[in-house]
Length: 120
Image (tube, rainbow, N blue to C red):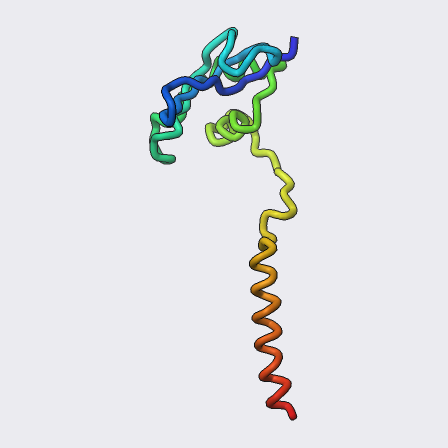
């Protein structure tokens, strides 16, 4: 049985509230779970203590049993110091988008044109 530690959504429309749960990976997102490990409230401020609450000992227990955290839960565990930070590879993160590249090319061409006129 492939175990996951993931978020289960609760709350009403446009007012999300998540439970951090240990569940079988084949179960639906908001379906049956084995144990509730904590809560996550994205509406609170990022520096709020109440934003993410979890039972760290139970999380460590599930991780030792082979449960795999989802990406979002893994980031929460890294912030809590339960797991070591992974080095994620996103080679295009610092690269500007297409429109910004076009603007930079036009600006470079515009700046180069007066310099050529002054040289003559």
